[in-house]
Image (tube, rainbow, N blue to C red):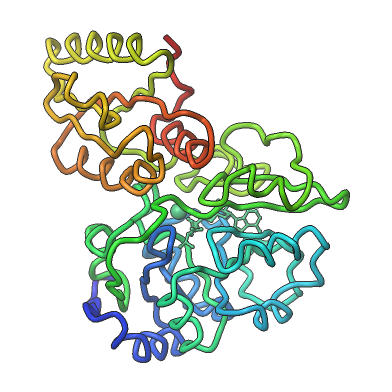
Length: 350
Ligand code: TXA
Ligand code: MG
């Protein structure tokens, strides 16, 4: 399925052409304020199928449908509960995805993976909304990475994974948040279930309605599948760097000592070692590759740098990676969720 991918380096100038490509059934990658998405007309089953094929994505994992404004919502969903409307009022456009009752026939069956719900989001990225408006249709868009790779936060990441496999790529510079949107569902009782933590934090959500008890680990987001999941994505391993990754949590000094000890042991066994540390600690480590994804006092920075760092370990052939745990507050919740998925196991507590 290799072909030529048209790349618009002046993204603003490419919007009209890229929109026409989407309307004609093409698949086009574009920046959002979270990560780059790979878009297709959500109503076109052939275009949607091509998105799954390009990514190598399991077909039981549904897609998020992106809209440019609220007028698109009524055609996609049945009337939403009051709490969901409040969440939209407060956080759209923005990094929040709502799982709502789908209007039958509104989108291709593969978009919802046969569920009676559809996930909808209105991105805060101006270019993304102009592209959706230019296409004139709802845009189904998963993250624009090969399944099992970190989500792309730059156009270069998209090219690494998908060049030649997609029709177009709008290069709009680096994405903002760097982690995918928060995915929520409101139940009959008006409680907000967080299916995937993300750019909108749990305290921001709690201001719009009561939060349900947290879902068991590994619920909504994951792509490279094994057995039949209870809900989409359960049981998938995700965001995995090629090297084995260990996440270590505890008092900073104990974390540092434990990581260095394990790095030294692994190096003696011949591993190519990597450490992902906060800027405040990075200089203390000795390893083949030490990366800082940002300061502890600015977790937003760490969030936006995480996926690029994971890709850098891969590119450098690092075979064993250790990562410092992040504080679990604010965007740190989403950051820890992605780190846990990347390492494929709960953190080692020291
Ligand atoms: O920030 C984002 O959300 C990015 C950008 C491109 O918008 N998109 C993204 O899409 O992360 P994707 O496909 O990588 O993740 C979609 C998530 C998955 O966890 C999927 O299981 C969940 O949304 N999802 C989609 N439809 C759902 C539904 N009907 N019910 C429950 N979960 C759903
Ligand atoms: Mg994804």
